[in-house]
Length: 222
Figure 1 (spheres, rainbow, N blue to C red):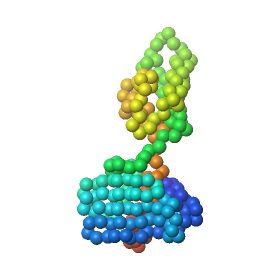
Figure 2: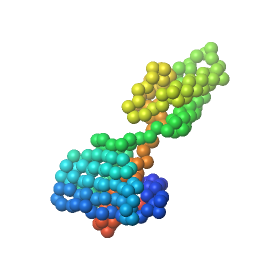
Figure 3: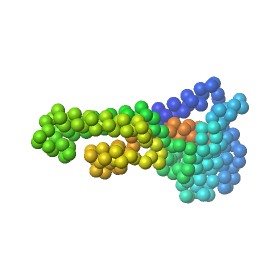
Figure 4: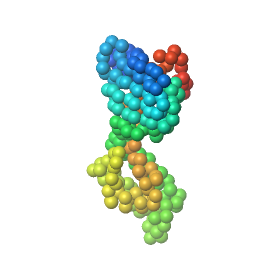
């Protein structure tokens, strides 16, 4: 987790003037259970972390959502504090969770505009095969591309991406026109962002473990 998201999580946890602290509920050879909550008793964003050391599971339950992440080998709280610092790696370990991605319409349209500019660049460099038409001049080709992306924008407003999204036939036709392998391209991830709750889970676990152990495990300056 980079410094930007660490600062975000810290700000959220302190939003109401709360002061979060870790409480060790249980630790033995098999389990580590820790509560991360406001020491003044508020339940806002309170979270319980359960580590099954032998099975390699991290179970998260609380006000910011629920998650189970699995490593399938023995783990320790200290090792997990390091492992989950890579957010993309952490998400790969999710077996189930509250939403791990968001798809805001502004993000969807922003990503689509980036793709539009990317393909306009290809077009202007004569590097788009579908526009190898001698009967079309440069302006006509650009007009067609812009119309296609405007159509994509309208269709995406009617059927925005989400987890488990079924892409409409009209969108498949348009996406395929620009990338035959569209399902492996930027089209399939339009608007996809890591849900901010994931950063809250990471921050709470790392800070809590470090409080209990009296030692820092990750570099917080990058």
